[in-house]
Image (cartoon, rainbow, N blue to C red):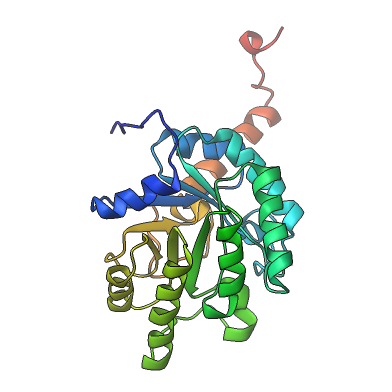
Length: 271
């Protein structure tokens, strides 16, 4: 199936316009030049260099250990690959919670050194001053509410969020505040579908869901999850669009056998 890809780069203004036009927004994570090039060529609207790289790339249990330097390093490669998609970089844990000044300084550094188009922050009213200052400084910001992985130790796990009325009311309140503060979009992670749809209708900026039903303006998944590269991880919201783990293991197995039996390289593959 062919996908029509515009020649011009996506912008935050175009992402906002997609919501106004009722056009769904497709977003995936990406962490390296090679895969980002393929995903971009396939027509993705936004690429998120997520702090999930802490898990996917570095093998950590949580997102907390990854550093600002590591995020900038990974984002540079994705930016070089993106000819069409808008590139968003996650601000890692500890880079925006300490003070507004430090938050803006770190966000500006990410933008300048990585070349990304926007940054993403987890949290609501408690980080609103930092978001306002970033937006005022010219840094496009994507919000993130619901299950916020950087707060895993506070939450005590990765369970469904905003099931109770009090937390649901706070999430809706926070979403409106983020919208008013100038966030160009908001990610809602692992919350009831009805609440996500309600939030989507209540704010002017696009809402991107992950485990939040189909009533949002778009969807995001971790690339390695949807490709079936990560094994043993299958939450309810995840769909495997490929079974790449099996293909990779099969290909590597064939390579090992060819080396062992000296059939690789053959005469045509030798100089």
